[in-house]
Amino acid sequence: MSEGRQTFRLVHATARQMASRAVINAPDGFVCEVRPAPKSRDQEARYHAMIGDIASQVTILGRKWDREDMKRLLVD
Image 1 (spheres, rainbow, N blue to C red):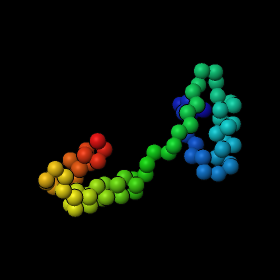
Image 2: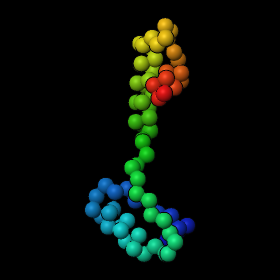
Image 3: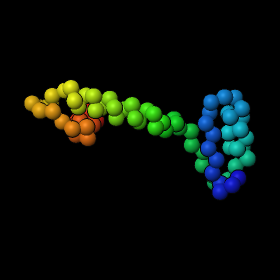
């Protein structure tokens, strides 16, 4: 294994087989992590556009908030 790190996107049976083979062949002490894929740039752009829309249309505590402050308010 080059540099000891491999990543498999589990989108079809062949990818799952390759990931399984990598786990079986990994040396003792290696760690296997299965987690959801990180969000894509498209998702992030859409998310920020939606926050901008909310910021321009919604009044909270008697005032309009900029995009960054609205994001903080929504997350909180």
